[in-house]
Image 1 (cartoon, rainbow, N blue to C red):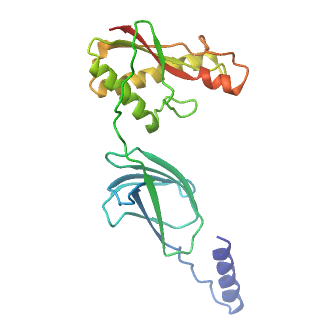
Image 2: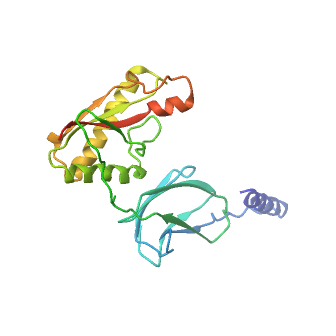
Image 3: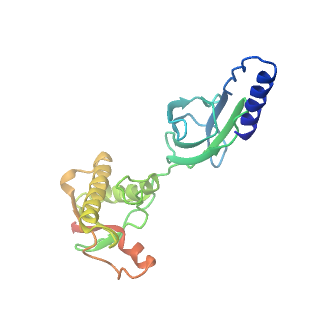
Length: 241
């Protein structure tokens, strides 16, 4: 932006010195092309993009079709939030700062990780036994489930499919940071999201109980960040086999 600003000022002074009205400056149009590729093979993928420019307050949505990518127009430096989805791959979200405001074109490539279904199940199941789901992730202070959670949830789906009489309770816990009522509601909403995922994956609702305890049942004292991480957890408890 500094270079563009100096050019504008130069044109203004040149016009005033000659006794002429200053010329209008055309806004630079930058064609931004974004693609997504397989992180292992680098093969370009058909991808659905959702893009938001913070400073320009603009949004774009569209699907890229190899080899053309997805193109949109920027007219200034900006910070972009990009969400990319492609069938068979984990969703990716990236934040990027685009500093070039005088380039006629700009390109960026996002790497997508292939999603693989689990080849294992939870074993040694016993009634009243609790299993901690260590690889379940939510946005901080939110019940938005992150794509990194899908492999472990699909492992639970496979366990339920291969054990037809299995009935479980999905239990949510938080640490003691913040308002207790909000923590309680957060734990309840998170397990509701997980139950919905399992139901969409074909598991009958009557096999799934849910409960959120907020910070009422800590696994460790809330006296360090490490212990607080232990308390922010999701578990499932075997109710019947």
